[in-house]
Image (cartoon, rainbow, N blue to C red):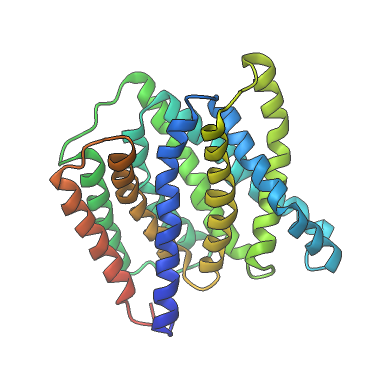
Length: 300
């Protein structure tokens, strides 16, 4: 953890803002999917984000900060995080439900911590394990609305497995992204991975449009795509990588537990979903888990 408490606090607040956008992205995506297919939404999201970041990638290549020989490796990272992961996530949600997807999101911090321990040799302390336990329990209460099992259907099981695979790829991005940050700035890594992912999405967009028809989104649908591409992808992922450069990947991944809390609150405000008292208890457990991480000694 950082030895500068104020800097650490500012980074944690930044991570809270990022997770608010990512938590709200499920509500925005649900509205946008009324006007376009999952593949069109995922593809246009990454294509627009790639267009926004393309000048930064060109600058990095011209200045020599990023060598052309390094681009294929970052392209693989972009494929993992922004093509394969997003495709699995959208397909999984389409087969399953938003409730199950939000519930499974609590698995990503665990996957990130495990991969960070294997890949980066980060310390997996007892405090982090307790924090993960509290936060995971809190996320479960918020999403499942109590201590009960969700109702899985056969198609839902397949969808949940696909969504979980997507979460694993997202966790791998957090770990691989930190390794890439040892050589490049957060902006360079974000630009290279997102621009290449946008290019890889082009044939998917064309094929889906040819087979299923091209979307004709309203102004609201276009605004949703812009929010997902610029806010949730460009701004959020660059800030995410900046935090990864300072804080351990496993600790950063733990803040993902805020997403179910923010997502449930926004769904109640925008979609009219009820927010039961168990959400308050779950939110308290999530805050307690973050308190354990913030109060961790510097050696952790």
